[in-house]
Length: 351
Image (cartoon, rainbow, N blue to C red; front, side, top):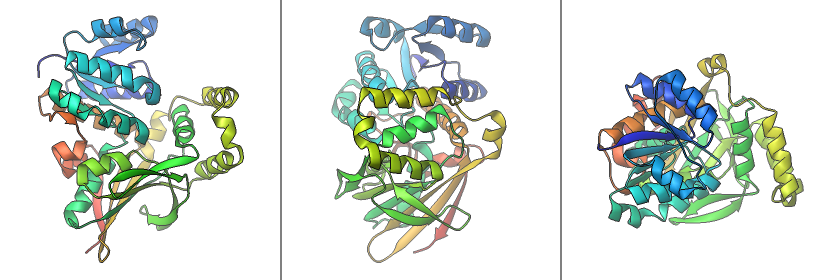
């Protein structure tokens, strides 16, 4: 691959884990972001190059992307930050990766597919815990049942209260995307409830707009996709709050209150928490007559994000790409997730 690897948002919590995973694979990313002092300190400590560029300054962003072949964008909230970085990558013909987990953001990036193909650029959002493991598991399940017409994709909830987890709950909102007949549609969040076996017996999950309603469609072509999140106490509380005060969250005071709450929480789980906790994903496919389900267990979500993103970035840096909007399993197959350390896949029901 011609050009260097740039990690934007390098001073964030998730990005710090990504840098560690990248260095373990022999990658030396150029660190980028908007905070010059923090970037310089981090880069000096790690012996890496750094570049300063606010996303709101197109000229500075263009300067930061000179000589860059691949960008991993790790600065959220992606609903605000993805578009300017995608624009810059297309201008500079740099492949774009990100850590977004928001279905609407990925759906917007998908609209740039033809432009990206013309420019020889791959756009692959959601290369962390959302959605590398689930995308690969969806592809595996559909490989088992090629006639599938529906996919139900469910994930466990992290027990750790962090800024990221609160922002994730906040982005779900009162309405969620699902896919019906190949098209995106809107349902009230938690409108659907059903049980999944995440490995410890049946556990209720509620429908939420997981990014898989976008990515799994491109990977598998299955026309009906619904995402579910385990009904943790935090999710149930959030759903109740949305239903009682949905008008508040769209206001400036409501957003300010959520931001203040997030500021009181840690950036992410501790090293010990990340080492001990595991996540589980279940994907079920059905064709009207038969049903197939498989389960994937992974390290804690932040850890999985770092490992998955580093593996994907390494493949792209080696030139293993397809242009346009792409998903991990579509390019590299359902077994890509098994390259993430300590990931286990099992088939829990048969045809």
